[in-house]
Image 1: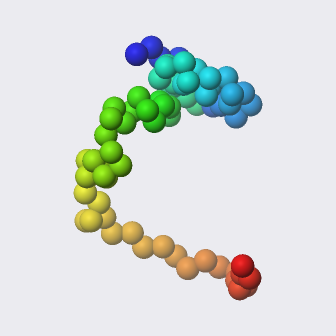
Image 2 (image 1 turned 135 degrees about the vertical axis):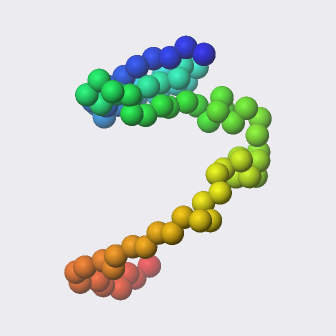
Length: 81
């Protein structure tokens, strides 16, 4: 598969150009300050016929990861939906 490279600025200002490249079958690399930071591929080419369940089973085990979050500061108000 061919690769096209865009800058982060291209992604922010001309996202349709980047998504068009992905639609045409290119893998897209996004760079920041000349260094690659993101890779964009289409979901259909990445999935390669896998179901969502297969993709979830293939995901790495994160059960050992321990994450704690600090309580949000400031005034919180109730949201009326």
